Length: 584
Image 1 (tube, one colour):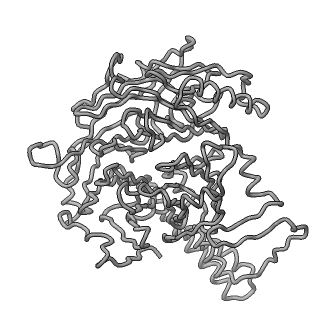
Image 2: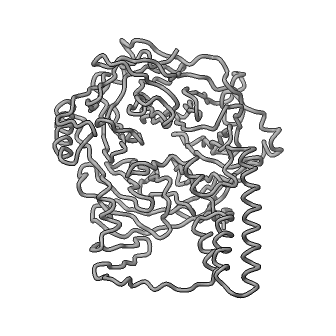
Image 3: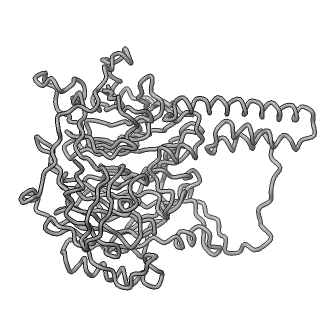
């Protein structure tokens, strides 16, 4: 039975959800509401109305909503009177005096060098050969013409082989261009002005990727005055941003060619410093970094790519790196570190995933799924993993605990259950809104976010879901005790005809929770949740509990690798650690 049939709150179109109070979502009708959403004339009045209503209804709503319009991004990147600054190298280029004609002189480079530079910037091998063939065709020598035909023939053969390989194994990242890998495996937003976001672990600070190569630092108490823009010549095609969990002074940015780590001290933020030191960790060409995960109790940064089978672990204070991997793995698209730091989830591009033990660096494999994992989150104590599978309207749970040999359902190693269970059904059903309108809600899952207390779960529907569901964010009450309990609260609706693209709970908050929702119009809503954690499950309509029916099982990892019981050496020991470059 679909959990959506018991949803308590479904706002009408034209209403906007502002907060949760006493376990009920509060939605209000917007003034000056146009059928096309928020018009440019009503943005200021609408934001003032929403923020005033939030502040009047809750003492926890002291952070206002704001809008990141496309115009502000273009102003920073294309204005002829601005100063383009490469913060990482402390060099600047003033464009205030540039007039026609263009000051840049085109240089006739060697075609071999030009093709190699194109390949290093993230192109694949067929693109390199095609560019080389086109460049050599303009030459008159017989040797260049022969090389041009040879490059074209090799490119054609590689393209045919990759097409056949993708037809046999369409889930794998091998043979795909960088753009195709980002479209299939990355969680970035392609349709809105904001691509990805990251909360600071302690401060009211956001890192917002407002274009494919710019990250904006945003103080939530002063949304009209950004703290600064982070730009670097290596910072292209941003796929993920993450603040370090321990200190919050390091910001990792995943790019096409590697990882750029910014070292941002809190004092520098207060003083308005415009330059920060950086460190670059390079991946091989054609290997975009898809996911990042910081260890919650160490300075380890884990990263992965859909084109390699390695998880690259980096100790950022020392700069030492070491890969961990297993055979018969092709591409990793999602990393998620447990809050206690003992386990690391690595979801493959294939219908399988591994959970690594951070103590011995030995993994356990689960497979038998219909498709790859789309999104996943741990509960606060790291004993439960919730995840959704691509093209399925279900949430699955996997339990972890210490393996003492008394529970036969728990495997050795990371202590995970032998089977995952289906705990939430989100199949489409007809729901009645608060105004009496019938809507079909439900479908596949795009993203989930769990608050730091483990009491609220936000869920975003995928583009394959019903049209009405794509405009909403589902809120669930959760309790992960001996038995997982999940109860629907209702839906969050934004400005009229806006579609939510990103959701994320604030990691550190004293009471309740705060959810950030990014909409396709650039509107960023911050919804406070006021609830009493002791009594939140009293007077609920129905509690959906996880069943004991196995969905898929953990595989015998010994059959995949003879090194099942051989752990990786202790990483980054002050005495024995050595740099291990694996990506050139």
